[in-house]
Every structure is written in structure tokens, then in C-alpha cells.
Length: 350
Ligand code: SAH
Image (cartoon, rainbow, N blue to C red; front, side, top):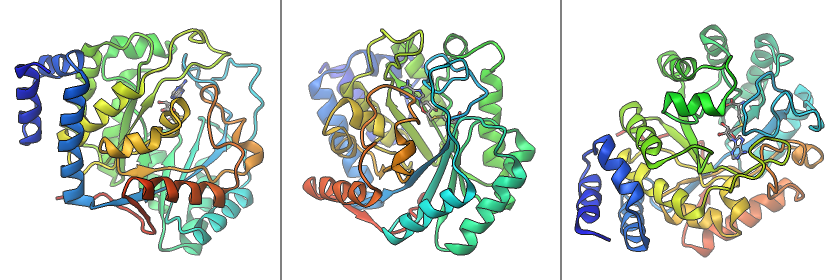
């Protein structure tokens, strides 16, 4: 580690942001020593706010129908080999019931942009989840629905919304998405969600095709400015039915490095150690938590559909029952000195 890199890390840990050029330098100049130092500082900051608690979210993958055609994604509409499914409201409620009994107090409804899930249908479903489980938070991750829809779903009881910005570089965004999708709309959606009152999550893939230290620097600057309540980052992993099938996956090393930096940029952020990270490394989730992540999101979807919700190849944890997943994760967290807690796990705004 050069003295300059050490200086940048000290400034970050001291609570000041960096310039975009400095974020790029910190990213490009990384080595094992810088990574250890960042992880140590990030761990301290995280423990100061959340202690050794790891929040758990039950992920329910409600549909793999999608009207979008994101170039990297396995459930993009032009993928004819994707075996499509959608869960019924009763099936979703059953997942919530199972999850609640296992101690989950947040349910994340995630899916492709599926027109079948109208506002009316979702409002009824969200209302039912909230009335059956008033002690739980509902998080949505259903893409860009427009401000009016976001508002209706919020009024129906949804608490949080995850919408990864994917990349904060407009040119890079264009290279990952079809012409009909726009970077401006993605970012505007995030500000709309915040104004409506949601706890909001942004995020991006690590190692996506065309990503550079400069585009990552823009992501970090965006996070510094937007101050998201949640931030999902995980490695890009190729899917065999996409044009990026031969592109290498993102690394554990860069993902954990960025997790530490993001923790220091915005200390209260709820930061998951993602399934994608566990997919490229059997100890990926543990490594993510040790680098400063504070959330895990095990799968609560019916096992019959988990393999079909294939954003990328090789996804782990598609065979086990929800209870097994929860126990396995508890053991993993305990093995590194953390504990999964039964709580909504809202962001601690300081
Ligand atoms: N339709 C919703 C949910 C998308 S899936 C939305 O638009 O927000 C959730 C996330 O999975 C995406 O935001 C993307 O960052 C990630 N993802 C998609 N394809 C991926 C791939 N090949 N490798 C890793 N992550 C991927």
C-alpha cells in the first residue's frame, strides 16, 4: 500500500468524502494491505452502529416475467430459454407465513417487471401481509413502476424499495441496457421513492462488462451524495443465454473492498452480503460481513421456482428448504462472531 492510498483511507475513515478522481485512485491502487485496513475501519464503524447484529431479509422471488431486456440479466424478455413462472398471492402469503415462523421480520418481494402484478393486485397483497404480520417490514424490488405506482404501493403499506442504479455512468448504463431504458429515469425513480417516504436502496454489480475504476468512482460519488438507506452490491456473474456469457465474473476481492469503502462513505447504510457473492465463493457471505456488510437475504421462495429465477448461472441455495437456509446462515454468522437477529432491522439514521 502506498502512503497516498493510506492517506485516502484515513480521510474516508475520518468521515470525509473523496473526490471522484480519488475514489478512482483508491479503487485502481488497491492491494491486500489496503483491503485489510479498509475492512478493519469498516468493521469498527459498523459495530459502533449495529454491534454484532446481522439483519436478515426473506427474499421472495415473485415472478421471472420481465418486460425489460437488460443485457446482463438471465430473465431478460428476449431469453426464450427462460422457463417463466409467477407466484400467486396465496403462494406469496404462504412464504411469508413460513418466514415469520422462522423469525423473519422483513419480506422482500422481488421480480422482473411483470405487468401481471398491477397496483391493485400488489396493494391488496401488501395490505394482507401487513395485516397478518404487523411487526414486519415489506420491501419491494420490482423495477421502475413510475411515481404514481410507487406512491400507491407505499400508501398500501410498503416500507422499503430496492432499485439498484446499476452504474452511475450514463454511457456505461447505455452499454448495459437496451435503448428504451434510460439512466435518467432510473435515477429519477430513486429520488421519487425517497420523496414518497420509502427507505431506499440503490446499488450496482461489481465487474460488469465495461466497468472501470472511473465508473466505480461515479458509483461511490453517487452513494456519497444520495446517502441510500440500503445499498446492494454483488459480483456480476455471466448467464449462458446472454451476450455476456463469456465475460468473466466480478471478484470477491473487489466486491469486499467496495463494501468496506461504502460502509465508510455512509456509515448507517444497510449493506447486504449478497447471494451472488456466495455464488462465486463458498465463504462469500462471511467475507462480505467481515468487510463491513450487515445484512443477509436468504431465499424464501418455494424451492420449485428458485432455479427458474436465474439472473445469472450457478446461483446457490436453490435446493434447500427455507428453514435449512436460515439455520445454515445462522451457523455461518456465528462462526465469525456475528448473530442473526429477529427484528425489522430498519436503518439507524443518526
Ligand atoms: N427487476 C428488478 C429486480 C432486478 S433483479 C429491478 O429492476 O430492480 C436484482 C438485481 O440483480 C439487479 O438490479 C441486478 O443488479 C442484479 N443482476 C441481474 N443480472 C445479474 C447478473 N448477471 N449477475 C449479477 N447480478 C445480476
